[in-house]
Image 1 (cartoon, rainbow, N blue to C red):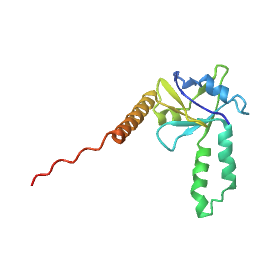
Image 2: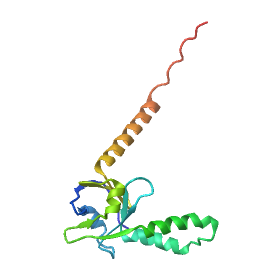
Image 3: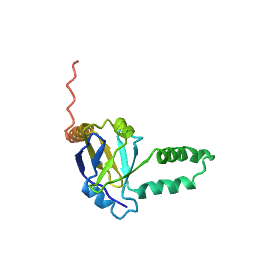
Amino acid sequence: MALFLSTFVNKVDKKGRVSVPAPFRTALAEQPYAGILAYRSLHGTWIEAAGIDRLQKFSDELEQLDPDRPEEAERYTLLSTLLGETYQLAWDEGGRVLLPQPLLDYAGIGEEAAFVGQGKHFLIRDPSQQRAIVEATIASRLEAKKSKDSPPKAPSPGRD
């Protein structure tokens, strides 16, 4: 399975074409589909993408589920929806894919797209959204560490 690391920001042309980062294409080189599979994230307003192997695992899992069993119905619906909403995006000889307008609109992507490695998959989102999430995450972690590392405050002397 491919491993996606780092963040890359690439230009999106007027037709919606964007270059998939070379390290991501290299990670997918051994896969039977020359491109990426992309869908609207259920975790936020961005695009999630991966190689065909990841979506094949979702498909295999879906085949094992029984939508009539209450304990499996929710997972079945989730996987069925995800697979039904996935776009297969083949890259051209320059490594570009055409991001469909519904995905661009959903993610609020304009002239640039950030490709954000997440290990076994990656995100495609507006670069300003990516920067805001990173900065908020770092600030939150630093604040939590600061609070944890600061000595306890001495109790205020009481007044009688």
